[in-house]
Image 1 (cartoon, rainbow, N blue to C red):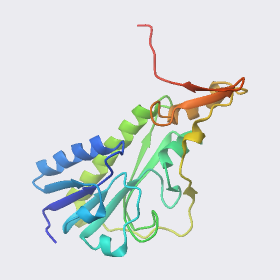
Image 2: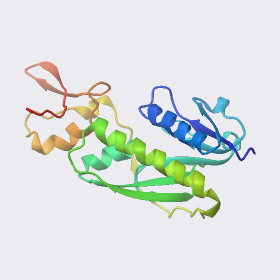
Image 3: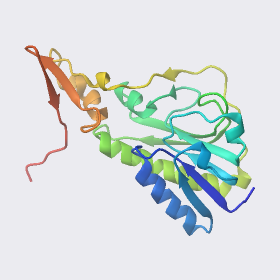
Image 4: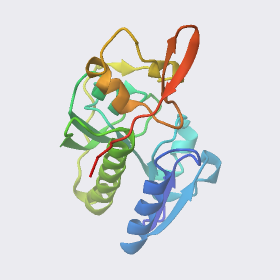
Length: 216
């Protein structure tokens, strides 16, 4: 494997793509080659493949293209495997999020753990804000893994854990019989463009848009 070659695997429609590009520039600045690809077929034999915002599992043969295949997941694995872990934890009322960088394997979010990093949110961040934090932490952990790879001793995940289901547009429904305060966490995780908040009232469906506003 080429020890100077790094690959970032993501999806062209993923929200994390700007961060993947930023990460690529940082990796290049450290003296490595770096290429962003959008399918497993494009992966070339490399030292590290960072898998970011890619929703398909790689096969065992595809994982052999690179020496290390690393994923950043926004939960304290093995708790919170699966989909949209940061959104689900915000919905649960948690403002302390543990990020886990681990090796991709045949099972979903089950590989050996390289690094963990814990952050604290203010509790007011809307989707674009906490996603930007998520993207920045992802970049930071990938750079840490790259620069300290020779000194990291990966550990197996404990057995068990929990699993989050995939979120769908229907999960953004607001209950008109409840207060805004009781549904504020839901408003924090909705995406105004891709899956906006909505509600049904008097036989019609209405869409809500939330953004921070100041009179100043």
